[in-house]
Image (cartoon, rainbow over all chains, first blue to last red; front, side):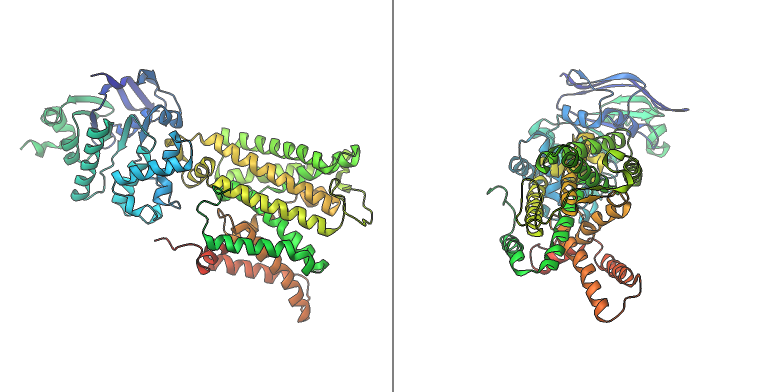
Length: 242
Length: 333
């Protein structure tokens, strides 16, 4: 399996704080990869470096055989990396459909083609029935799925999901997990997710990377990683051992 | 043409056609006074539409749009005054100068991440800078003003924009209709969708692959160019230009009141706003005179109170409410 995304020795320092400390990992084509870790571990910083919001101080990021670190967020998106935001950022005054059309415009010549593509994406995310509603009026689970739909409409090869399960009830989490699994299986979409909800991580991820104080302390299959003493101690909590 | 009408409700088209017919016939029905009022209304509908591209569509608040009116007006007027170059060629130069000024303001702001109120302050600063600069720009008359030669015209000379009010009426009507059609087309194109995305959330827009700098520049360039055209009209209609008048912040505020009252970001809002505001000001004038209340400032006080009331009752503008009222827009949940 070839690596779609390679992170090599990436570090980012904010004044005295080393937010990401020499992180390296590979995300293979067609896989689902999760990054977990306690609050403040540097997950979102790492995520923002990949998405082009931040430039790494050291290290390189190779996506689809090309170096992408230091590119602007819009250039990153055009290279084929779609992202969601931890705190959802829909375009509130636009309809659900128009939100997704904005994303679909990226690789579509005109409005008609973009709308057709948007409808297809909305159906996959169970939002087609709500396409005429204003995004401002959606419930949180719907807004979370809209966030995914909008990113998906840009036809990414890699989808970055930043805590897309946070704040969802278990039933909604399962629904999102099912949607993402289908996307991954049917269209071969590679997914990199940052997640706190272990229920989702265990169900989705093939590989898991654990960050602590910016450094990777473990990497492997979900089952193996949760048994690592270092992970248990730093993240899952001592009570998880019992 | 059919694609242009895509997504426009039938009833909306009927209303538009009726309004256009009424405006086309107006010179035969209206007296000179009313025609002058209509010219002012259409002038503000046009400039409001141009400003609306920047703020209503792309979310960039310009409080100095008078600079583009002034630059456009002065460019065409100076070419006519000094070299006898007609206004239609002058128009090309005026648009170029206005758009270039917009490009400078836009580049400085967007390249260095100046946004929101700071961008608004930058636009005011440029307009004030132009006002003071033109006060000392003696080639175009300085603070004493620039005057175009005036005569009594028996017939209209459209090529030199010299003639009776009726000619100016049709010129500004054509401009207003053209601006409306252009904005409609823009709003339904890639650039329109991208502008709205930037207006709603710039970081999210960028994450969807939108080069936000480039699209914000497009908004400034188009808006500034369109507003400069209004400047040419202004110069040849009034035949005089004073820096203290054309570049003053009051002029900029006049331009933005219409679209805000009518509904920023909507296509019809600037037109509704222009009719409402100018109509209101003129009616207020007549009304206060009729009841004998002509203490200085009374009109402004009442005008201000009515504006206040409209903003409180319809903060999103009159048009969204009016559109629902006449059944043009289905209510969204």
